[in-house]
Image (cartoon, rainbow over all chains, first blue to last red; front, side):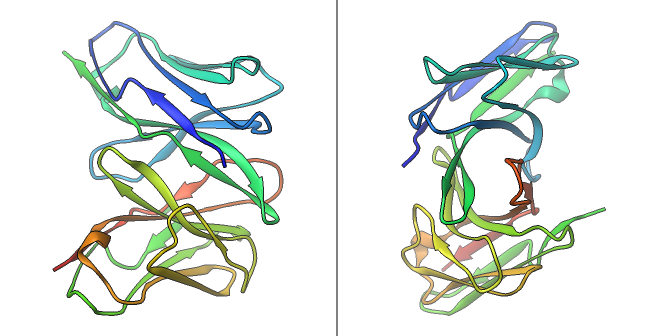
Length: 114
Length: 113
């Protein structure tokens, strides 16, 4: 099955700096890659996603890049703010049994230091 | 505007008890999922369902079963709770058409003593 590796597991940055989280996946058939943000005590929420026919997608301070050949994708957060502090999960879609499922990375705890 | 509702936020059960975790979604989604979340292990798929009365095993189904009698409701059952099933359980749902992200519930923190 699909395997998603996520790095780093923890990341501390100064407010205003950029943060980058990287993920690799194993199944070349995967074609959908969402990112989730989970604040302490809250549910994971989708913040951005990318499909395999696109190399990059941006939404204000957040961007995601995808390299299908190398099978890796990354989340970039610019001008970080304290409210960006959270655990971030990447995921890759896998097909099977009439539907699809998401396989998640183990998460990155991002701390933005004021 | 909560769209995926898990019946309990916190639950404490004894070893050997049969435990039911309920999840209801109001978005008419075909797919529903149960994950458990443990520190350092991320989210691991227990079971999923893509239609009423259909169920498929995920990566860690041992010790669990599920029920989906209605489209909006997906139940996770711990047949005989054990201490290693102490965890955060997250329910999610999604549309089957195309590839879309999940909508998660708020989670149930289960402690087995």
